[in-house]
Length: 366
Image (cartoon, rainbow, N blue to C red; front, side):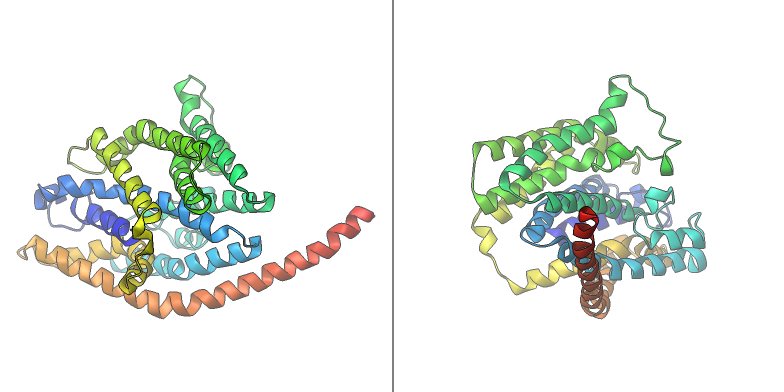
């Protein structure tokens, strides 16, 4: 499912989104295909639902140091490669973006948006969103996981986040966030803004899969689906329409969100959850490097093809190269650097928590 979501985003970027790759407007290159692949942008929303499920599953029963180390080891090695290689491309090889060395350096943190720094690659905004979700899960871990607490969190958190991100302005309350760090609406940002309902839906799907069906859990899942389908969908339509010359339908976006949820339910609540085909592991492994590296490097590769080459041949070749590079990154970077970084971070956090465990009681006694 994750690779499917990533490929949906790739096709959106290559065949529907306005981009500098083709020798003419991309809408002229793919007048029919682009009208369909523009909805591949919903792969991001599917990612967020899957993350709600997977991150809660991976955090359940673990310590905070173990969880943090696993996320750092999983995310940063390939991400650092993506930032440095794309930065090199845009600074040296193919300058197509207002970018400086300081922007590349700030992007190495994955939290560049918090400092008001632009993303080296446009897809990185989703990683900042994921990081904020991880922070929320980490705080919940400190409190302690129970089905009841997770259910209440998923019932209250998304509507509050939505109100802070969108609802304040809709009821006529306008707050000047420009004086805040990075000019960010931090109360909403720390609650993952308008995307909270997607993560919460995935969390509730996991809760049902692990602890069984309960009316309250189904009701909370339904409330988050309603928030996403009726309130988020029009905003997604506006975002997609602003990046393409193709018409974008809010109703189709709504159907796409429901299909994404249906895929997650099918993969976790039905006999499909017992499928153990070995190639699925490789497909999942390729997802992250595909997502990180496809956009600007893919556009650069496309622009190298002469205008006379059939567009679909150019597209197929580029997709093949993207998948090949992703496999190389997975085997050469993620599988080598990831475990080492996870062990290093886990060891450092464990030692720090051990010291704090000895110092804090003494401070309390003093």
